[in-house]
Image (cartoon, rainbow over all chains, first blue to last red):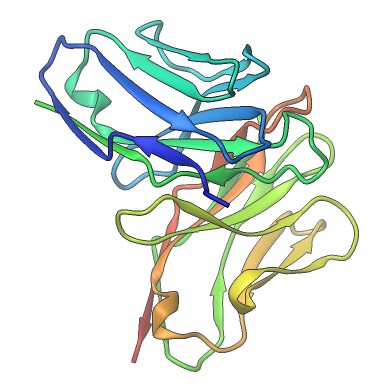
Length: 115
Length: 115
C-alpha cells in the first residue's frame, strides 16, 4: 500500500505570494494533520482535519488555512508568504482523531523556500 | 499544554555500543508518548509508542523505550547501535485534551554512530 504522499516535493516562492500544498493520506485513513518543521526544530502542529471538519488548530496566523476533501485528501494554503514561512511542511494521516492506536504516519514533506 | 524535552542536542556513540536518547515529559493526566526518527530529506518514521501497560515498549528496528512515571521520562534505547541508526530522533506527546491526535514534539536529538 502507498504511504502518505505530498506534492510538490520542493517549492520556491517570493515574499507576498500564496502557496498551496497537497497531501493524500494512506488508504482508509480519514484524518489528516499538518505540521511545520523549521530547520533545527521539531515539527509544530498547524491543523488537524477529520471527515472534512477542522478538529484542531495550532498557534499559527490566519494566513494559514486548510481543507479536507471527500476523498480525505487535504490542502494547506499559506497567503502573504513571509521569509519565516520557509520550512518543511509535513502531512500526517491516521485512521481517525481518536483511533485507539494514536499512530500518525508522516509523508516525506514539502520543502518551501521563501525568498 | 503537554510538552516533552530532549535535553541533549547530539548523541555520539560507537557502533556496537548501547544507544540512549533521553526524553522527559510534562503532562496533565495520562501521557501518550511517541518516538519518531527522521533521516535526511525525509519525513518522520514511527518507531514506538506508550499508551498504557508495560513500562518497557518494544518498537521497530530493535529500538525500545522505558516509561518511568516517577522520573517523568521516556528514554529511547537500543542495545547495539548501527551506523545506519545515525539520524534525527524526536520524542512527542499527544497534546490535545479532547483526545485528538495532535502531537507536541521535542526539539530533536541528532544521533551520530561512529564506525
